[in-house]
Image (cartoon, rainbow, N blue to C red; front, side, top):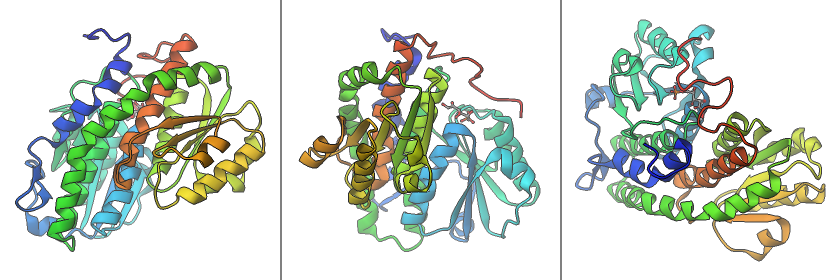
Length: 365
Ligand code: F6R
């Protein structure tokens, strides 16, 4: 039921502190400073021998794969490649021995993701599913996997499944990291940071009324740009996809530094740019990208973690989110973007839970 919310999408956005708690329940082990998973069906020796990981999926699940790539490479130092399932299934790429293939999927029924997993499995690679729907086709086809436990996601636009995918990928990175070089102390720190995540998401959700005000100001735009770097680059893609699919506004996500290589030509006074820029490694660089857009007359919306005169001076709007470590920023910074697309879609009279031309699970290729 809607529980008093006007749409499932809004309800599911607000469920995220709980769905994240459920994703982590029973999976954080303080004694060994690692994560534990019941259903990987691989021995520690088999997992220790993994030399490459392929993450595959479609749409929003492909975006969480991009987040996972940054996490696994940072914490476990295992090379990762991210593949669109629809491409992986037909491209016939050479895949080395000791490659582990993860299919990431909310529904567990996406035809391309299922086919990509079956194709890699047929070639003798180990496959795992990172999936929300228990007993779904992909959960059954894989050698093992991890459930998201996000609860049913009814809105066609994926929200809580996305944050849970990112969260499970963070725990997997911790797990693989602790099997390799990561110290007990670093593992313990990551566990603490994960435990603080649901409260940070709760705090991020309080931006709702501010985001609604901003939505009203920009709801008539025909084009949006979303820009971020490192962990916030996938967030830019995800923010743009959310806006496209439920409000039918054209939007593009880019790594902020790519602006100069073409997209900045799109900037004019009618094209808002959303900068996802919580403080971190590339903060100053993104600030100058934002200044360049502003200098060309584009309206700027900044998603930031620190009150700063410089941001307030450049950006037309600032949405504040709590400070979290960089690897958790994708989860927290997705919240205002989910809300922005939701409020814009409602203001434009769109059917947010059932957008035109889309289905919740894409069971044909
Ligand atoms: C976006 C969205 C789609 C799905 C994609 C994959 O909000 O819902 O892009 O993410 O169709 O679906 P799953 O995760 O069920 O495989």
